[in-house]
Length: 493
Image 1 (tube, rainbow, N blue to C red):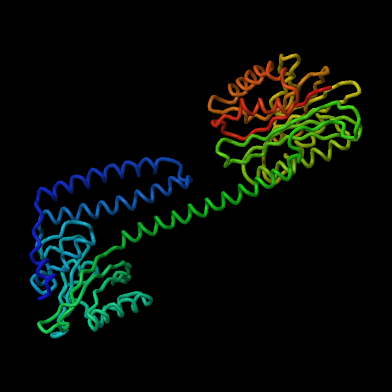
Image 2 (tube, one colour):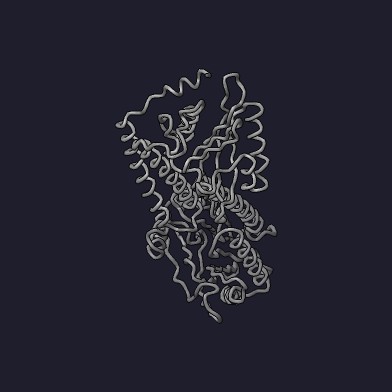
């Protein structure tokens, strides 16, 4: 008899106290994992991270339940219910030890394999052509003892066609070349149920070393494979969603960079070499995560009559849809402004554009038109924060004329207001994403205004609008900002 069979036959029965301790630890761990699973199930079903967490928990709970049942039966020391004790034949204890290692539990005594839940044993005798199955194996295959066990010739007919070659090759290798069996296949039971079976075994040799029979342990791993498949599909789905999100973000960033003004730093009007009337600087501040690219914009345009159009705005949403909508809106704004429209009629036109859009969207906007000949600043707003005017280090929030969000209602009308900035005055335009919104929109807006007004003394010491923009970025570029934002600063000469 080979030496390893003597070692397996001599395996000691585990102490009951040790098994009880393992059962207790398994139950505790199962309870903790189940609690995490329930918490994940109670949250947003659309969150891919939560779907991934639930899939992992489902697989862990299934495996812990399986392990707990196996340990319980091992503790109870249930006897084998087959035709005989497989450990009583050469190779039986070896298979019992191997089956125990398959489920990561202490090696049971010979004959305890059938107690390992959803696992059964079988032996096909090559000398007598006899076949012996354990009761559990009959249950796995959905057969009765009256129907009898399957011979090696009959067994492949129960398998999926694509799995038959796998089993045939494994059995042939075992019987002819004395190689161990380790394969997996799917069977179709008489009731139509499909089960996945994992089979391990090896030949039982006679006194002269020839193959006398084949002994195997077959385990129903259908639920385990189903959990693993769900986990794999969830992981693949999450990876696809992540790749799609990365692609959409890249497209959104590229579209935003293509649409926003190409100038970085300062811009001076007029641009024909005449005396400077307005000195400009602007900056885009991404969200703290960098993952959300919104529809915020800033723009400055010199008009044919020598006036300057200054505008900032924000469309709802994020990603390609928001940036493409922003591109459409900004293009329309520039085109209408070149016809000489005042700020209020400009906003009327933008509102009609969004109101007639196939995809409903809301937006806010602020338009200012500065005429250097009479130093008049005419402005209008559509649900947008009003600009701030700074003079000698002191700032004030301009009184906003009437105006609702773009796309909110058909036929909306927008009012206009006029200011006359003095030489040296500073005008600050910004979108509403400068501050976190956890405190509420009204509170966040008021806080943003106070913080901007507090920057007045620092603005007075700055030499250029670009330096003022850097001050704003230092103040509002904190990591907790939840949304992207734009700021545009104009210095009047």
